[in-house]
Length: 295
Length: 273
Image 1 (cartoon, chains in turn green, purple):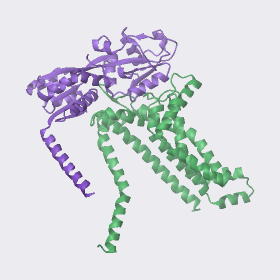
Image 2 (image 1 turned 180 degrees about the vertical axis):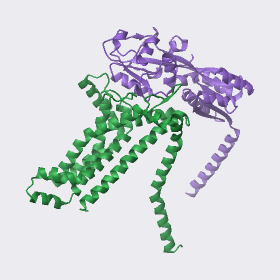
Image 3 (image 1 turned 45 degrees about the vertical axis):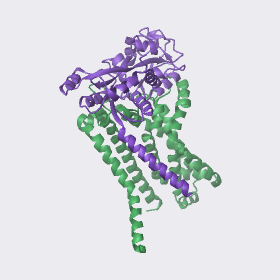
Image 4 (image 1 turned 180 degrees about the horizontal axis):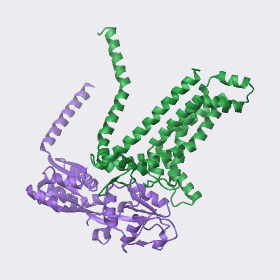
């Protein structure tokens, strides 16, 4: 039998291996992304790839410009936030400050359950219920539009925003509130002038992570955004975000072809965008921690 | 207990013996090529292997060009192609001492569909070109109601798009306003939900929820596609090196038999007879 020190060492090393495995996977993903996708940047040129709006990957001569797809992703994400942020932050405030504790323990987990609904179900809802409704309301030729995608993505990023904002607001020390109330401010003033400014960087973290959810969402936008590679100049027209393009075309792009590389190129851009989001979310989170700890 | 165990061991040994024997006796056939023909080749291979346990057929996709290139190199027995062989490929094959022989195995027809509420019954190829290139945007130009045309297309890497594009659009580019859908089913779904929509699907996807229009005065059906009257159609080929003999010949005969053509029909293509 092994003695206990060797045993402990083995267990330690195995645990370390598991702990580092996610870093290993991430490195692997980055290597594969760049190895498969980077050639397109040298072939087409980065500025042509990013700023040309000709996405005609299977034509002769082909067009590999993702400007319309990139703009669609950005516009849809911003739209989703315009919808989700007011609802999300208001819900967070209500849950943390107004709702009695016994209801809070029901309401918050319920909202968080929204995050567990598979995205294809959101897609079905958007396709069969929301899109005919919008088509009727606005008298559109088709209900599969940027607006449909915005609303669906807004709903989908709500749980992230509500849950994390609520955590941030609850994390504001009780002494801040007590001090404000003691100085004669009423509850509304305390909320707007004291609590929200203190929690703001935590709320910003929540919003950025919600944006990350929205820009990376694939199945729902594939189903409801319409899929036209138009510049998103009108939110009542169909659009084609980057994720939908990858999902729709990867299956039939010959491995190693320029089209395949261009799809990986889109994946690189998407990866970099979410990376930047995460870095900003981290910075905001750090600021928030310093603020509530009273630096 | 012990008895059962030993019985199982004997059975397992017997099975291993049979399997090794059959592997040793197996004839091999390799097929590569067009992803459009892939479902036909795959299904035919499955059924043929079920009936002939001494045969092993491996089927791969990769595109018509890759399949024909592999046939020229002598790497495969059969090349699937959704187009005819090019002159340059024939020359390369003859240089290698190969003589590619085409076998037409099925017809692939694509129906143009509109919403059942649309009053337009027929379009010409030229009309379809105008619509899909974005030059015509209202149904009133084609005798329909004053309604914006919602152009629905397959994504541009699909085989269905390739045929449709070659035959209808030619040199014109697909309008960027087209709603690109990832499957035949999704196209039919959007067209049946959208009053002003036009789309195209393989003949196997026609149903009551969409309306197929006449193209150049011909309604799409198995008969009109097989006869060549319906314009948006193409033959699908399997190429062999020389006139097929042995297993290759038997497999091609199977695909062309009544049973093989039944499988073609099951996969949503148009059988030859």
